[in-house]
Length: 263
Ligand code: SF4
Ligand code: SF4
Ligand code: FES
Image 1: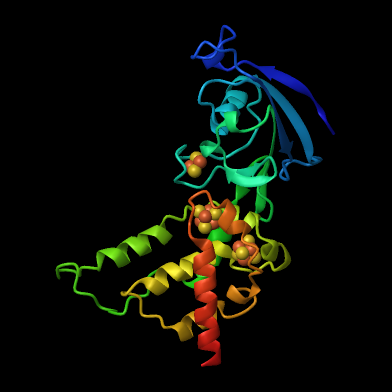
Image 2 (image 1 turned 30 degrees about the horizontal axis):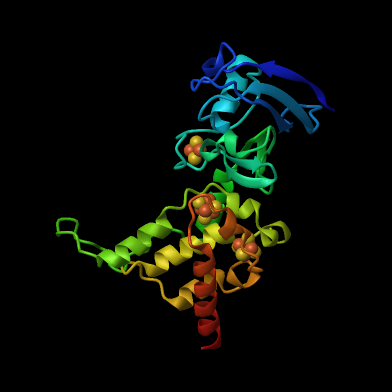
């Protein structure tokens, strides 16, 4: 069911011009809407029209729509700065973060849909947290200390700065789910750990405090739901909004797991 387009004028462009004095573009934002909690709800596109403001992100655009026109529209935001990962959605067919996407880099007609694969809460809101939690529990995605009874009064051990930097780089994952939403293997294998899971293993495998060996990692990801299920088409690498080196990590871990499997 298509619903009639509705018009909204953003506060920042009242008077018909942006802060820079130029009239804003007229945007048409088409949102795929569906609320599985509501009886009788069916997926449908709804169109909203608004005038583009200077520096407008999709976060700002959606909030304008929500505040001024349609409070029933569901979407998720927390940080507005690309660090919580909650605003991931499909933007013109590609997973991305709405708060980091400037409308000026898109055409005048923009389509927004919820991330596929994850449980739909409503409209653009999906439950990535539930999936991330089960992935983390399966992979034991936390530090398993070599020292089971650490002396908490002891001075912290130092870590080689280059290694700490490397671990930090992989720790920048915000669990947005874009890599999983873009992944062909995840569509075919429900239990595939995704690039986010492989990156998680890579992070703890690097950590000198972690007790696990490659034999332990092999038990977790040395199978088709882990590194051997990955088809290496690298949509995850291309779309990760944090530019994580997923291509390198997948290749590196796969080689290590082959070595472990053959050894
Ligand atoms: S690896 Fe990148 S795309 Fe995947 S969840 Fe982490 S930040 Fe998002
Ligand atoms: S490279 Fe592997 S993990 Fe990344 S999107 Fe492709 S199949 Fe998924
Ligand atoms: S709102 Fe936190 S990443 Fe977009």
